[in-house]
Length: 202
Image (cartoon, rainbow, N blue to C red; front, side, top):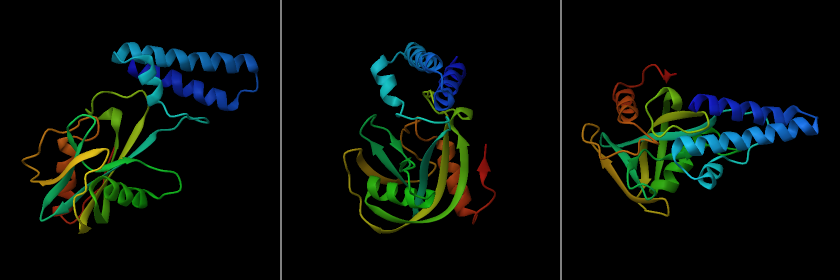
């Protein structure tokens, strides 16, 4: 059901981009509304919450990009504690317009932790739907993971993050599995400690 809802929404969004027929436009807009209603029922979320999740996108429907970084210091990995759910995750967030992926993840690390970091390599590109992140989202998301090390700075909590700390990879705190999995951290650690290897790609 989840995949069908996503497909209905993507096809309707792309249809709105190309149609010149006002009646077809009305039909596509209704299909988008139906997809939101169906997802609200499927997720037990209210309709307003579901509609706020969807960014006001137009044009051909494409996956969203989430940037994440395994930032190391003394072979421990940096995690940040999200205020929204009280769980820990790798620093990161949505890619922004007019930024390269490297620029975006450097910015996210600084904003979420207070630390300046040096990016080493891309170690994984994961399709969120093909991995056990939960809950499932009503849009396709590609997750780009980078290895990095701390250059300077100090932990600075902010509106989104309540704590910043470094952990052994075999002793991780409860993770925000909507954002990151223990396997993501382990993949980054193995890539980092082995001096780089083949990038994981779904």
